[in-house]
Length: 114
Length: 114
Image: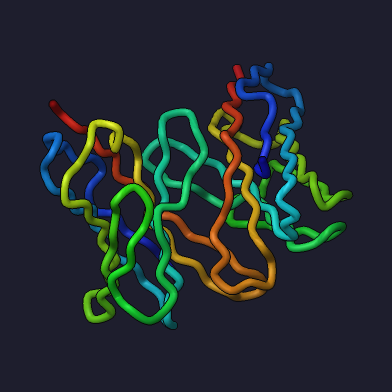
């Protein structure tokens, strides 16, 4: 069965420091991979997506993610975190069986300290 | 601006009552989805619809029902059979037929049942 694991429930980083959020997936075929961000009490917003091609993908708000097939990982990174990046981040994998469905990880909550 | 509107933002009900959550989109998307979000569990798929007058159960459909009479609307009814209805409910849409089309989310409805 397909699954997505985000090992870190929460992470705290200092403003200006670099960030890496981990994501591992289990999927038999070439995956469609996504990162979404959610502010408290809001819906989710797409940060970036990977389908094929260049394994390093750029997203909005200065985020990037790298697909590593050998490690079944799709980690999200940002070189310098801003206080406004504090939110919950969800990694997701999409599968196309009887309609395109998206499976989400449990999320990682990011705290940013001054 | 195109988007997804969920109403109301907060909903309170007594145990044993059915309640309907509204979801309307003006993105001209064929596919619509309902997710339930609980702390630490990510998003779980309740129902989805790829086309008008058709819908399928997701992973946790028990105690819920939906209808899709119009392309723009996909209301979710939480019935009295749902054992733990208190949660944050998110509606989403995507372009059906476009492989890997990301989800567009509404801002959610927080349902509290006492």
